[in-house]
Image (cartoon, rainbow, N blue to C red; front, side, top):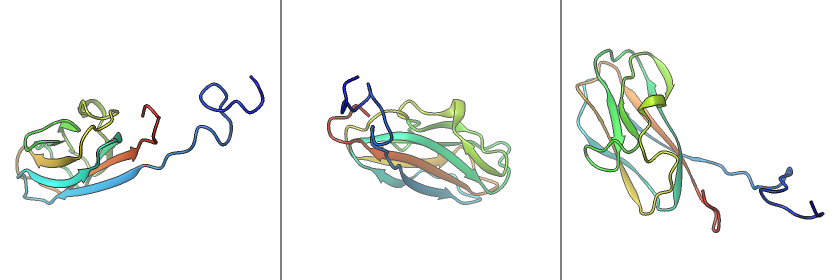
Length: 133
């Protein structure tokens, strides 16, 4: 490579530039299940992570999150049945690892009244101009 060539063909300590994800949180308290608009994600965001944080077991309930009142764009019927932090795994929705084309409201809901509170954590970053993601 020629000296000074930077970018994907010649990465170094400075290129490509580091990106810092933004984080949004929402909570469904114990006893709640109703769908609510939790927060917004701006247009041009690359959704890079969806997680749940559970304050206890929810053995029969599942939670979902998406861009409509019954949407599962981000989280598809995830069972938060133990205390702690969990990656969405197989319950990851189709809009994760994609770039939003418009401002999006994120809705969060449970299949039935929760036994323990569950937090939804969504990470995203704004894609720099001229970058694919």
